[in-house]
Image 1: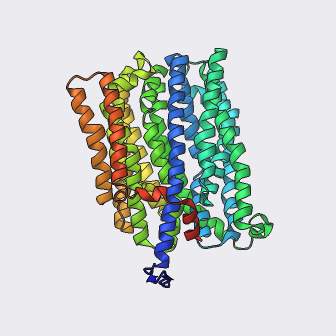
Image 2: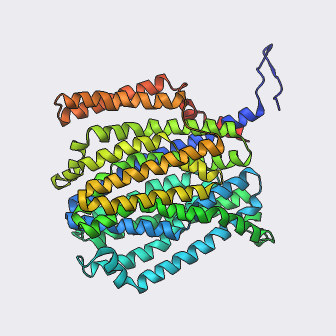
Image 3: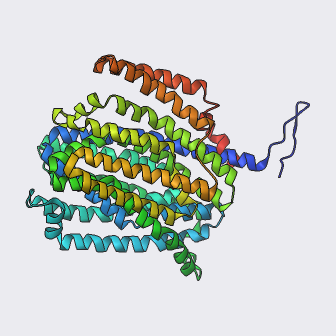
Length: 531
């Protein structure tokens, strides 16, 4: 429906299509959420890297390896126990918000929350009950009684973590990115970092003590996100959301619908976490904590790019769900392409720098970690391909193809584990890196083909061509030439500093072409158009 013309000062304003105004408002809302999440991701990435660097400096490589292995086991357990519920919350709450049905919020939260907490409690109880055999299975005989303590701590933290993840997923589904930014991106790593500093002062740097810092981070997120969710529910849906009438006769159908979507996603999420963490666990078991520590430290550089990509991907999920529910394919294509360019703008300078300057970067953790250079290079090259696919899995999942996502993830995990079993005994940490590269490529290229064939959308266009060309020249080609000519770390630092200035200047110069103006639209105007 076209908008009416309005006479201003003797001139007529051009007709503005109402849907276009809402589309622009929606894109700006996503952009603002993405920008806030990106800022939080930047801080979280720096803090996470600082945590890794501090652990490698205050603890021996063996104790650091125990810590990294334990954290990997914890995150795999969280991926299993959360059974995909946080993503289900995002999908259904955003969907019913877009359809203006707040009365269904409570049913969705109960349909997902009760099974998630119940299953998590069962896993935690089993972990505590069988702590001795589980500790020996996961850590071997090398660390003695510490394995039992770590398993108990992981079991307790598991319950706290899934509550935190569920609450954050629900707030995102209700259209609020601030809880994720504040609680998960700022408070969580800050608490961990401060706790590590305290342990260093107290000279408590054994593996089990280090794991406590991650537990405290999850606890802080849970304490912040849960009351935040309750306030959002009251504001978004009023009494209908929290009143027991929300649990009506349609709840059974709602539960079936929820788990039809979420169950495949739960398996897919578990596979995705496994892809990222199983190699550290296998390295610790087969080669020992020292190799696990070197590998984990080298891969920590990737967290900067991963958090940036995840921040933007997280911010577009609710909008994608709404566009699919309203069958607006053109807007979905535009959003996918634009958000992919934003991911590339944010991550390609990082991955290209890691690729070219890996020799100097891994030495930050100490000379004993220099063996991680080729690990960093291999994974950085793979992540360039992955980020060029954009938030492809988010598009697939928010379009209701969670079973496709699950299948893709498990194919990637099988490839990852198979390659790890084959290559780690032959190549050590380089073999683990190659296994991860293989799974990264499958996990992104396969769903890319699926969204093109199944949904008719893809991330490639002029905007993504710009997003690739500019960082390749500024952060890839020029630094490589200088390094090849014999440059040292000082020249690399100078080149990088100049590159950042040039890059920001080019982005500002081409901000309209690159779609970056949406990131800086007036917040009040965006809220007005969205109404």
